[in-house]
Length: 74
Image 1 (tube, helix red, strand yellow):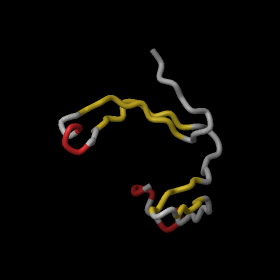
Image 2: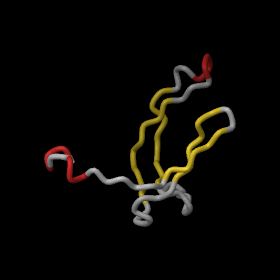
Image 3: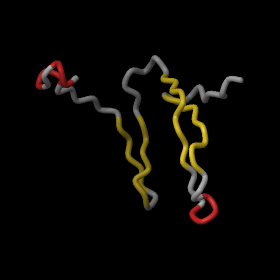
Image 4: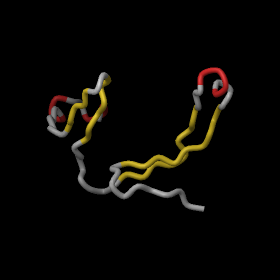
């Protein structure tokens, strides 16, 4: 069976439950990513991040410093 993917998302992750020992005490699940699906475009999507306290930030400006890195570190 294939996992359902959300077409509007840049990335989808298929996970399996790895550990549920902390569920009863902390309502905390640990999952393992078993497969990742990444949309081919846009290459650098604009993303929104919740920073807490009702505040969000939008990320999307690309700053390349590629020329300053040694090829072996890319």
